[in-house]
Length: 238
Image (cartoon, rainbow, N blue to C red):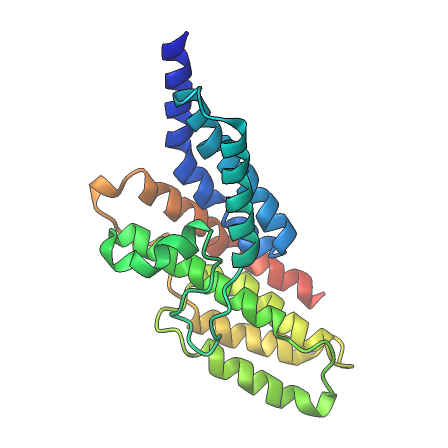
């Protein structure tokens, strides 16, 4: 029975890292502090702290609750994104308690597939921050100026990943819906411009054999977005 408990605990520990990485999708789809804190606290409880009780049955409940509360507090303070300035896209933009926010600062020490994975996720978090910065209301005469500011920022990344385009589409849509202009051709023009610039594709990259299976999963995951992001554009055109 003890061996089964240890085996189950080891499996949970083994699943902790990939599950933590998958949680990063919440950073760019549901970037709300409550949602992120709840998700990360649940993850830490199931895949970190609960297995610890299997290996250490004598662990007191107070200590377990303290660990959970500490991690939840750190997650809440960290938030979905950092407070780093959006003028510099290479800074850490995903929350510090997230997988990407934790490993991004040391990405140069990791293998190429992990570097690409962290770079693209950080870029997505960066665009999410740009979306949050869109003014609630923009006067029609100020729209061109606001779009120029956005253009200045979006041109800054050296690597412009195609998988980021759905978030750029949403960013453009937010600018236009913040004005009195409806169904503006500016959106279509801008989408064509950015789709040509943001052309770096993860799905077409070749990685070393020892980077499998992470490389296969990363190429499949981002490849789905790279191949289907235009469906979002077609919906907006209607």
